[in-house]
Amino acid sequence: MSAPGVALAVALRTWRKTFRRPVVLTFSFVQPLMWMLFFGFLFQRYPLELYSVGVSYVSFLAPGVAAMTVLFGASQAGIAFVRDHQTGFLARMLGTPAGAGAQLAGKLGADVARLLAQAVAVLALGAAVGARFDPAAGAVVMAFAGLALFALAFGAVSCAVALLARAPEPMSTFVHVVNMPLLFTSSALVPARQMPDWLQGLVAWNPLTIAVDALRAALLFGIPPRPEPLVGLALLAAALFWLAAALLRWAERR
Amino acid sequence: MTKTLAEGGAPTASASAPAPAPAGPAAAGAAALRGVARTWPGGVTALAGADLELPRGAAVAVAGPNGSGKSTLLALLAGRLAPSAGSLTVLGLDPAHRRGRRALRRRVGYLPQEVALDPEMTGAETLALLAALHGVPRRRRRAQAAGLAAAWGLDEHLKRRVETYSGGLKRRLHLAGGEVHEPELLLLDEPTAGLDPAGRELVWRRVADHRARGATVVVATHDLDAAGRRCDLAVIVARGRVLAFASPASLLVAHSAPDLTAVYTRLTGAPPEPSNGGARRGGSRKAGRNGRALEAGDRAESGEAAARGENAP
Image (cartoon, rainbow over all chains, first blue to last red; front, side, top):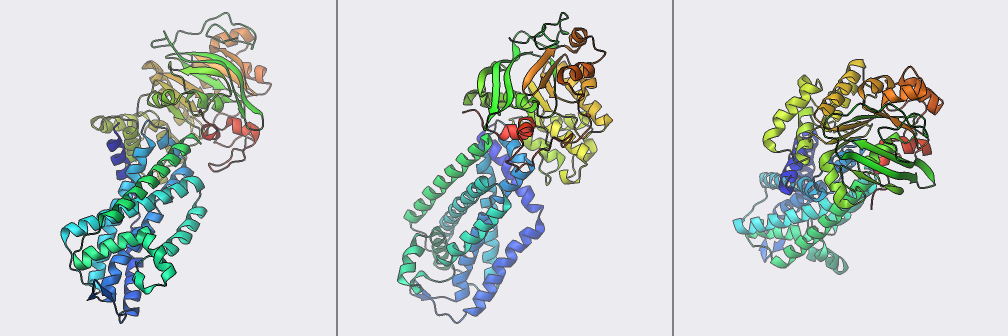
């Protein structure tokens, strides 16, 4: 079977399983809403200026929480591999002639598409609680491409960890240990220039910052992202996807 | 010495009666093993110097006590495990090479003893996904799933999630999933474990169906009564050694025994395990899917452990 056919079959399986857990799906929206409401109201008097224009904190926050939703969701992408390992179905799928890379592409492609849809829903929630956007279509498309690359990269890391750990406990540790530092050393919740100098350097290199800044500039001001950071994200996603695919091939032989 | 159809009885003796001619093309063998051995780290021998030639189109039973090397033999034939010594070809391909292993996946159906299904998927989705991953064209998948469901008595259960299935239904779906690509060589590791008599009969009927279409079927089993009646050839192994390889009829003649169970008992020194047990029987405490520290004999026995073990380079 062709690689796209394999990827599509695996993607359909991934989506079906996702929509069979409506409770999990629903709670994935509750958390961003809570962040938006609590942080939004907590810092509503927080003076903000981007591109020399004053913006409300909730408008600043909405793209950050949308990207945070993608971060949290992508970090759990590997859990499916742990479950499949435990039922023996992973070995069964890998024992077919379908390539491991195509299977990984289908699984991560489905996850990335779902996470982008969730990001759109979170932005709509943001608009409902007072965020104001002035987007430009081309810029938003480019920003979402950046968000997709970030989701792909981080989802691949999660899959790599799952394939190495093959148990839920290390996955849970990974999610908790990695998510929060990545979130708080990014510009998702606070502008980088408000941070200490030593932290600003770290924030600039954080892939989440690249994705958030692109989304924020596109949504609030219609400004398209610079291509260089997006190319960097693409290279990072490609490298991490390659790593996860190699680990999947390795799992096939274990 | 290579054990062929004309040989059997005691390990060193030759049986006089040839096996029944297997159905289907038998010009080229399904598999040939030459001095194949498999040892685990720590020096435990799962299989020692096996010489076998399996003809195409035959139903072959592999019998032996728990930990005797049955599952290791099947995993080697599937290309999931590399031999520590010796050489083997399967369907004319060399599983030691990556290209050979990949080609084998298209042509071999390998079903380890432990049921491997996703509980959150329905039966229909499971068969459709496995068919897609095996490259079955989309237009054929629906009809094929319906055919498999009818053959395995799963028709009315296909739309339900696997988590709602009984143990027997899960095993039937597990086995049906190994047939989606109509393999030339089907390797079944204790397929009747945990099934009721009707389920066991169904398994043996499917073995006959595959044999009738010209496929080779190798069945690791404790059900010697059925094996004696349904298989063209029987391999009896113990402690990693092939003790006998011949047609059931010639084994009975060679050992002056009334049935295959008596032959087995004479060769291995103990009667076979009950054939209707589950995955954990008779003191062979197999580790779970995450178990790393299998006991030596169990590790050799466990197809799942074997499949996950050190593989071909």
